[in-house]
Amino acid sequence: MSNIREAFKNGKAFIPFITCGDPDLETTGKVVRAAVQNGADLIELGIPFSDPTAEGPVIQGANIRALAGGVTTNKIFDFVRELRRDIKIPLVFMTYANVVFSYGMEKFISTCSEIGIDGIILPDLPFEEKDEFQPICDKYDVDLISLIAPTSEHRIAMIAKEAKGFIYVVSSLGVTGVRSEITTDIGAIINLIRENTDIPCAVGFGISNPQQAQKMAALSDGAIVGSAIIKIIEKNAENAAEAVGKYVGEMKAAIMSV
Image (tube, rainbow, N blue to C red; front, side, top):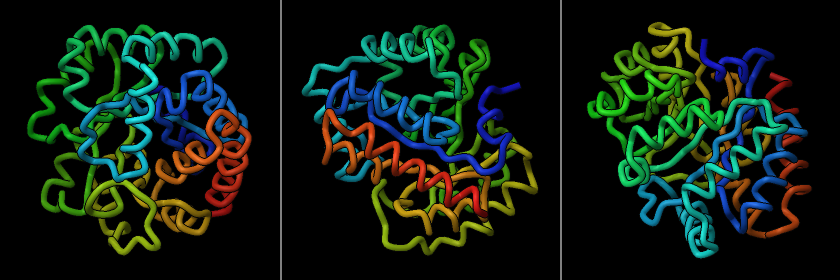
């Protein structure tokens, strides 16, 4: 059974997204540990990419800072090896297909398996092209995590039936970023997912405050937050861990009250 299920076994899951190497890997390690200590159930680790098409300006900025600081995929693999000495919750990578292709698909995915990465999210990989990745992910027991967006419509049932790990429900059209409100009918999307699979689904894109997280967690199995956390890291730089920990604690408390 997928380790990712562990993240959802104690009620609603809170899933922070953190860009590796922003501002440096040492800070990323402190931020990850602070998030775990304050209730994070699963962590998405972003591998920076020079052209992150799904990202808004906040996460693009984090990618630029991390790459400028000299972070590489190999350094991130070593960083995860070190993290895994004490971090036991599920970890997934979020990156772009090009990063995996240029590294070598089998080499990348087999290394993920070896270092304790439970899944990968590739936001630019269309559902129709996932068969290129799926057999290798299956071979190394790394979940290829599916995204379902408001535009998925007639494909939602099909994507849900084949999903592994958890389903990332994209709350809004466009790129990642903080939104004042989420207007998509998330409930209808999740009902359709649940008719086709019992795999957990968590909502991301645009969640930034406890009220939004609570609302999305009430409809789904958890909430994913990226840009709001990256903003805290950008503001506090090397001293971000404490502020991120406090924020994660507040968000986790909000979704557990559902």
